[in-house]
Image (cartoon, rainbow, N blue to C red; front, top):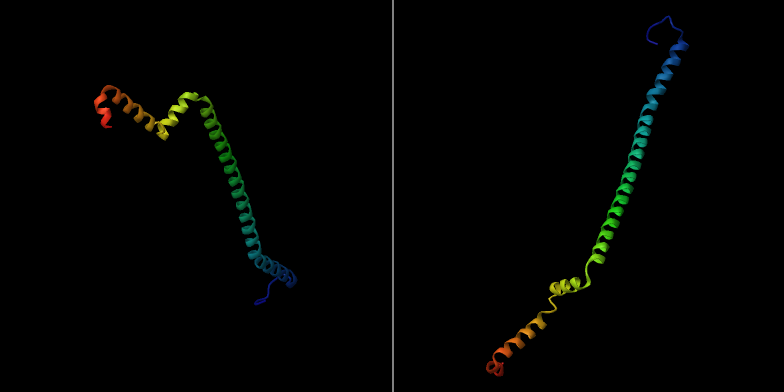
Length: 113
């Protein structure tokens, strides 16, 4: 000690040693607290990821259900006509029918065709 005090030297040594112990352990405690916070944040991250995945699964099931309901609610002949329009599979048949009708109206020109 630098100057004499009225406190017993053993008491000042004990206080000094406990202060040194606290200061020495502070970085380890700070890092442990930081690791605990990071682990908690990672846990929350995975919880949110699982929740988002479950919600996406529910949405995809609902969309699939709506699509199947629409498919089953369409009339068969209307669906065939719509698919023919989309695929344009009836164009050749329509042209053949048109050619037949035109040939029936003008018999002389049909010989040249």
